[in-house]
Picture (cartoon, rainbow over the protein chains, first blue to last red):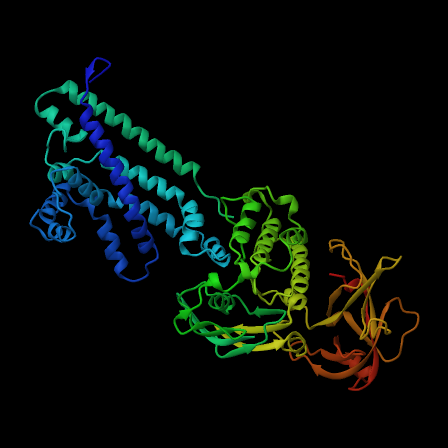
Length: 230
Length: 369
């Protein structure tokens, strides 16, 4: 495929978008309960768990990737456990591996903004919903999510963007299999290795534009979505 | 009936109510300084705080037993918070609908939604977004919303404290009449004696996280050391009903044992400029500062004071703080009126218990609110 006369690999782009979308959805589903649990936790274990969630921010992606390969290997306990439930299939060096790696790597980008939003909830409003007989899930979706929407949007957008931009974990857990696990960041690396600077340029400039737009979107949201508590 | 013994630890503060049992009818005011545990006790009673422990029963229904608590959603409580706590992503109608949609079948009775909206005076606000309301309007919506949950029990946590004086007196009138009309047992927190005197049937006094005593309003205002008395000195609360506005702009405030009988006494009041539309026959309370009451041994002549109320001296006590004499008078219907006099006045008039006297009160000191 060509864009304005320049060569463009479309496969890595599609793969990257797909992995990032799935990761963002999966993390929204597991990150929200984790964020709620942590935000409402008063025991000392909270410090440890918060640090654990934030770990991917500081660890070299290679360390994370290494442990993931070890943990997910076909003879490992996780694979055996899944096999027990009839789930076979490989967990590394394919799209599943990419998603698992991305989920772990991007966890703090989902959990932290949502947790901050949960902690800032105006308790009287949530209490008011309770006295109006709203059960937990009722008030969660009708009151808490609307009040915390800023945290949710920032969390999802940052997770998506961060997954698009990851390199180390994807390389370790996914390998570099053309058409299967070669994401944009790896494709750029490949092009540079083979001195295909034009191709590397096209993908790189797309990433710069994309990232800039995402960050502008997030900062714009932060301004606009301040919930006015009355 | 409220019955129980509740504990709740919040940070450094510890509520330990002690055993309590008191009637739930009418308005029960939780009164105490800030930090005395009023709000914490109300939170424990409401079930909003999952860390509450102990025992609590409302009308023989168990709401708390040890760690086990009936969920708030099943307690049929209407709660009005200090800040109105309206749902910010909805307009006024949306806020009311949130309550209405969740009423269980068996509680769908009583005054209609329309009537409550009219009564609380928010019809013109229904389509307004909630961040576009004044403090008084927000609190009105909060009160309507609490009533619309069809509660068996109303809880109000300092609902007037965030308002300016005008909104405060308007809403106090509203709360007073709504509670009286709808007959909902109410727990009301305040640290303002005026609100206690206007609303309370009984007062739960609190200090240091404990209930120190539960008294009827009459009991609470018939001792000199009552925590309800501020730098204004002792206050009496007289119950009666309002009459017509007479051509001079005065309103009669009377006590009658029977509708047709001669009134036991009649006070003449000035009309408060900001009071609600006047309804003759409405029950009302008169708050009289003891220092505004003078005493005459005989009915005085040639005196401009209109309020010359026959009474009997019940007892005379010395206020240990001011060295003034506090005279407790019994009115013809048995209610108490307090007068505060100097020691010299008591001596010159030779006042003592069981004398028949006249209590003199300037109309200027009395408002029909």
